Amino acid sequence: MAVRVFLALGILLVCLAQVSSDLKLEEDIPYQEVSLTVKDGNRRLMQEIDCGGLCKQRCSQHSRPNLCNRACGTCCARCKCVPPGTSGNREVCGTCYTGMTTHGNKTKCP
Image (cartoon, rainbow, N blue to C red; front, side, top):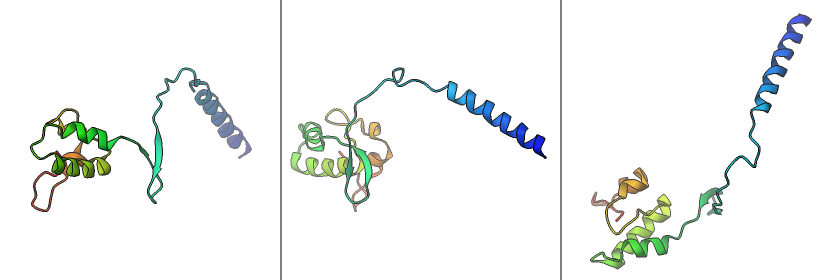
């Protein structure tokens, strides 16, 4: 019984030594500075983006800019994404942005 325990501990030590030698140093890992903030009462970390500025640019050529800005702001707040350009490219933001609909089953996000 004691032999099996020592054998198991030996294997465990060898595995731990191998794993610890594979760790990368902090200098080797590229660093991206992203501002993360805690939002609302749910305490989740979310990337902070400028929904107002992005939606203003997105809706700049829309025939109804106020309506577009309101819908875009809602979609940006929920999905944390605004597609590039003034139209199209909705798939860049994923299913959250493309799947949101109004009560009349029309696409909500511009």
